[in-house]
Length: 195
View 1 (tube, rainbow, N blue to C red):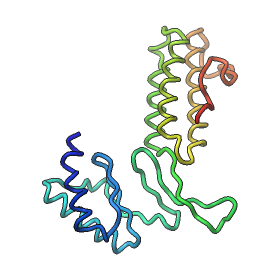
View 2 (cartoon, rainbow, N blue to C red):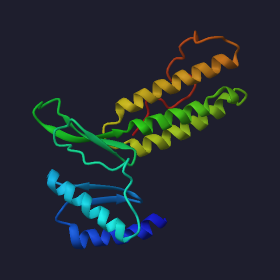
View 3 (cartoon, rainbow, N blue to C red):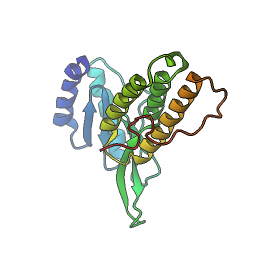
């Protein structure tokens, strides 16, 4: 909340003084500036440093970089999505902007699922575990439903199936990773279901 209050001045100053350099996109304390050329991007970065200095703030050097996305070779992460230009299947010479969950977002979701299906939760009834996991997956998919997220959803589905199979095998005294494959949706998970 405080970031929005303080950085609202940044938005106004950018529109008044530096709009010609590029478009500033901000959500709380995360910002992206879209510029048509590298020269303008460097000028915009310098201008942003000046504006933040006037507010008594400074940019994080580890998170700040200039990325040329036009070639499709590089991309950037913003609000949990990885943004990049990708090649069209139908017209290989055409590139279009696409986004999908970033690697960091995928790692966080796997970590959350790992916590929800850990050995310490063996005693919780299966239907409650499934309910909790479904709630998490539903919310996660609602946020990341925009863009090209189908592959990431499929990876997460496989991970949930594996974690639930391991948890159930531990609950029933099976040893090692030699558990029988659990058929899709046999335990009521909403795998493969997104809108």
